[in-house]
Length: 155
Image 1 (cartoon, rainbow, N blue to C red):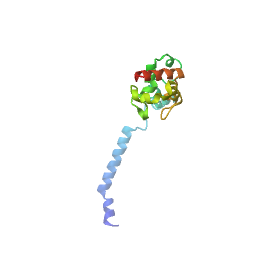
Image 2 (cartoon, helix red, strand yellow):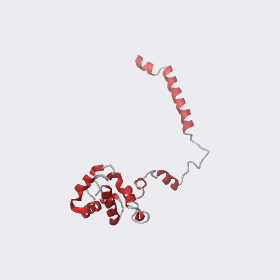
Image 3 (cartoon, helix red, strand yellow):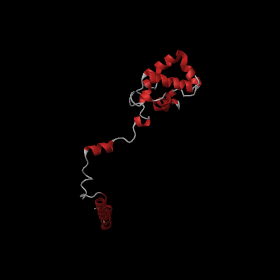
Image 4 (cartoon, rainbow, N blue to C red):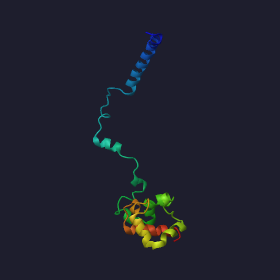
């Protein structure tokens, strides 16, 4: 045996290693006890587990549930509310080349085929915009939103 091996297994090193092991065992029992007197916290139902796994925020809650369905609450929404629910996220900031609401020049460039051409692009989707802006709005609701954005842009 070399002198380096003798130093590696010296009584002092073994004592430090034993102390660290003892400390780890004590902390392990304090933080993660093996036996808990409260069995209710250990046994969870499937519903409890499913509730804990649900996302806190969903895309529908961010968009104000505007994309949920074309019936019910969405049918009663004004064009401004529809815009805020599905269109504002991109058209307020000009995301991915979307014409900004209020930018007369940008909307004027897209009015080459008239409002019907603009409406067909909005319904079918164009570029990065999915069909109907990713919403479940009816064609009439999309028309009202397009008209709203055009009026806000001075068109």
